[in-house]
Image (tube, rainbow over all chains, first blue to last red; front, side):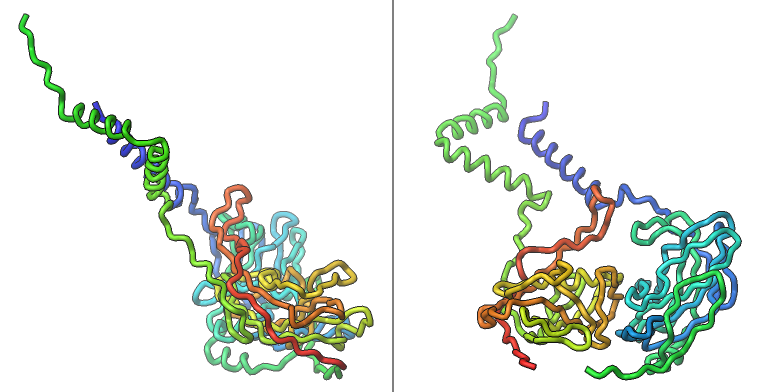
Length: 207
Length: 216
């Protein structure tokens, strides 16, 4: 027969073990990371539901709105402009998970103020051409990779699904050069016709 | 059949002494003892974890404060009549421009809204903007207004101007500002929204800062 105090002790130990199991161990986590399909600039990455090709990567200090009366958007670091062609292969779908990752696996979202694409929606077999603009600190430029998938990274709905990862091929030498850029380009979003990025010269606005 | 002497077990004698000891205690002492036992029993679940120091630092200009996702410094505070080319003069109000520097020192993008929400104040004389907004946020470098949907990427720093519409009769000597930190909520089973920043109502720093009046 166990005495009351030992029973109380056992109860407390059982409660503590339960607390540790539910709060410290990832008992609810299911390891369903995305299936990453890797590629390089200029080569198509085939996903189970879409084809993705990064066609161009370049730096900019400014992105100018198409409305010429508005002020140009200036990067805090460097704007990394990623042009990509996305073709849905099965059905109409939306690629909402679009971001860069650096060599420390830190993520970088598109710049909302730049007004470029933050995602791309397309019909099956219809290539959509998009420009994504990311404001990235200069020390994160070397080794940047571009990631795109359907679903949304906000709600982690890329888990267990295909995700394209394209090495943007930014070397340390490129990064040193990109950090000095003063280039400005006109914003683009996405459309079903290929577009050329338009470089512009900005004029000073008097206060 | 043989009569046998019944010898009380050691445990039974011990329980008897405990009962006798407890019986001699007053009601107040018993309640106190139960409370102490409950506190000790909560120890495995964090019950004895020390309460965080709630020292509120005096707010200093240009000093960085860690509020969780960002390091934020209040660089200068000015009262303006207008802010060309983005805001024209309004005779019925002034503009309180709070210049801050924000650095995201996490490993993920965080919203601009998280950067300005920690900044509050007392006696600011705040009036709503025409659209009902409390504050308008502009990048200092490009004078572009930022929306709540804007993200600040990891390692990125921005100088921002937080613009409040202000009553011209505001006593600027009584104005104080405060910076509130965030707590990270790693798991939120109710919303399935992990790693959320929850604003702490106790400021990390607060105090009066000089307001530069620009009468142009």
